[in-house]
Image (cartoon, rainbow, N blue to C red):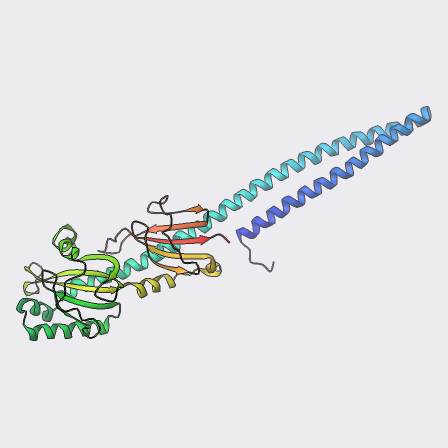
Length: 340
């Protein structure tokens, strides 16, 4: 066969076989009807000629008997084959749906797993840099020279880590003391646009040594979507030292999330697929595909992972499992196959 063998092509062949069976049974029924008519005419002629047609009448009776048996066989065969082929078509359809649904879930898991591994590294970054001696000294002394040195240090870090828009050094109230890209973002002296990070860091959420904000437009960065990460700078750079400042990294969300989705292997059916990263409420954080979704996907029927059919096609999703010490934020990878 020149065409690629797939469950869909097998299903099509099954439906063709069912149609061929129906057509063949109809032909047999038509031929059998003609035989029956010939037998009937033979009996009429036999009766007309009387005793001389007795032998002819006997043959006519046998023709009618055979015709009746053929009719029964054809009817039974047609009914059985149609039922079996219908069942087979249904099985192929279910198997095809299951295989496609599983593929969508696998792609969704790949998406959320890749972003989780990326975010785990971001959690390591903010904790590590919060122990930097120059940054700790700037928070401890609040000297202009030390703050300038801290800004320079943040610039060096940003040159090596291109996944960040900027990094901010703040006091405990959230006032920004220095940042790594002052020429691009003049934020020094301003307050954190998301002050909830301060309360989260001081509360239960900060027990891991960091907190991760939500993906949202950053008012101090031209409303660019960022994900803020925060960790305490502590006295002397010691793990148990008293907090003396806050380090906030601004993860450049959009290009990183789009790169993750772009890495998914859609295959030959990619034109009909749409991939998304969604928060725990189903709101779209990033998406890829020829058809851009205007509203959140319906993942209400899914728990941690699964797939189901929708009026628009089929949807598969997988919730974050986290990675290493990063527990995730309850986000979902979602891949939708659109009906053609």
